[in-house]
Length: 254
Image 1 (cartoon, rainbow, N blue to C red):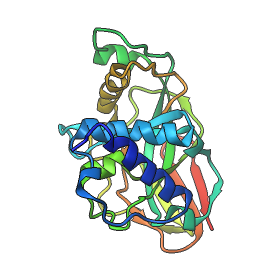
Image 2 (image 1 turned 180 degrees about the horizontal axis):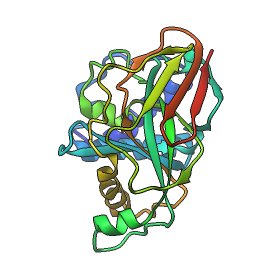
Image 3 (image 1 turned 30 degrees about the vertical axis):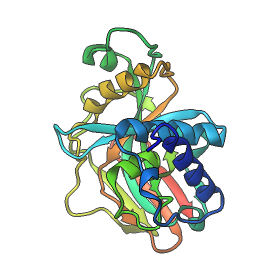
Image 4 (image 1 turned 30 degrees about the horizontal axis):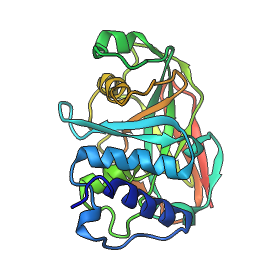
């Protein structure tokens, strides 16, 4: 198996599928990423083939102490609040309400890893975001986790609310929130970020990014996992999100 060529080939298939608004079916087994390193290489290839820079990251964990993973977000997939989206381009349309952070400094590659204290001292702002989750694979979500990771962690678009100064005493574990579609609440009975306090994800990101020889700019938008799970929108409508203490965020599905 020529594993070195697989990330480029898989990335090309993903980019073509997105451009042509079609879903990928079953692929040859040797095209799927064999490990996390191959999946992360595929992410970088997707951005390279699309000719777009990263404008942020999505990061998350499935438990309070579990492993962390993430994906760079193409800069052209970041949108201001009140943007409008064609549902066909993002089918199936999953909606998630999240908190994003920005740093007040850049982090450059270095031999020594950045400590938690260094990273947290660099947090400058926070905002509410709504992610549109979408896959390039027809069988999603019933595909292997490594394939989802390679496919930019099923990222479609990120709508970013207004940033406000970071507050360390903000309730990041149990914030008050609301998410509606067409005026109807789509918040589940149990509301929580699987990672617990999403700030625990930030040191991982800084070190993961800089280990690749890349500087993490201070303007990157870093969204940190859903408080509301994922809701699949079956029709058009206005989507409004609110996390207590943060400016609201909204989008329109047409």
